[in-house]
Length: 327
Ligand code: NAI
Image 1 (cartoon, rainbow, N blue to C red):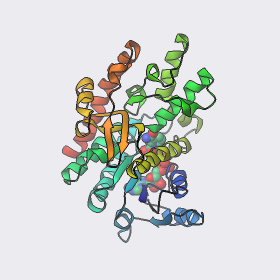
Image 2: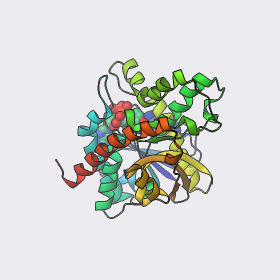
Image 3: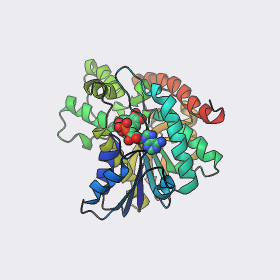
Image 4: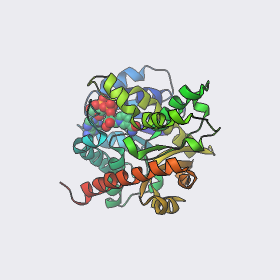
């Protein structure tokens, strides 16, 4: 199992690389970034876990060396938000970064599982899909937008209301996209079920949708969520790796191209969008099936979903347009 982090020297990339270095399921870990990877790799190489670690910069075919033979590539490359910015404001810079990295994957590791963290995820995942399609190597079962941080936040914030001792034991489907009102937590579908006082529900939903802003404000211009994101990115990557290695019954929401995965057509029809986050059952080939929880939403959640669909459609077409009609 060879894993790669593209954007490995950044705020997310470093702690994510640390977690991946400690994962016993990984034999080889390659770090790629435009700066500092030799240092980060040297530092992590002293950890006595099995993964053999290497660091590459773009010079000397670094991207090719990092990506070749990769089984899973996680992308947290790009600029993060500052106070007052939306994820969409990042598009101008991050769209091109993701396009070029995914082009590199298409050329050097066309069969790799690709996990996209770089924002705006609602647009960067469609960009990745278009690049892979143009290269003739798009496998929708292997392309994931990482929305796990929204799930992690929902687990944490709901526990602050219910008093659950271990927040992770409550499974909450968080669906839709990954920015503001496109993020829709389905608390009515939580397992085990949760009881949220009606005067607290709106604030709870809003906190999951805009939880990232709390971190951006608290960091006062120094960036957005990095440590909680590294945890979330690792959690999702580990699940993909475990499923690929044969573990069954693993389900986690992710932002995928619905028409290309089992069970996806029905959800695309219900939502009117092709890229959408729903609980995904993972298997040895990546996505085994997309689970349709949209129809289970209660009336309050259906209203939230309507707002989500409207926002998401624009974000997705913006990504597709960026590749079809380059600026
Ligand atoms: P950062 O600025 O600390 O790190 C980004 C890294 O990417 C830097 O080391 C930079 O050198 C590298 N980079 C830039 N261009 C590159 C290229 N062409 N190839 C390889 N590496 C390149 O940013 P941070 O805080 O780590 O955030 C990274 C991204 O993750 C941002 O877009 C941010 O919005 C996003 N993010 C996504 C979340 C999610 O839930 N999906 C949550 C939090 C952040």
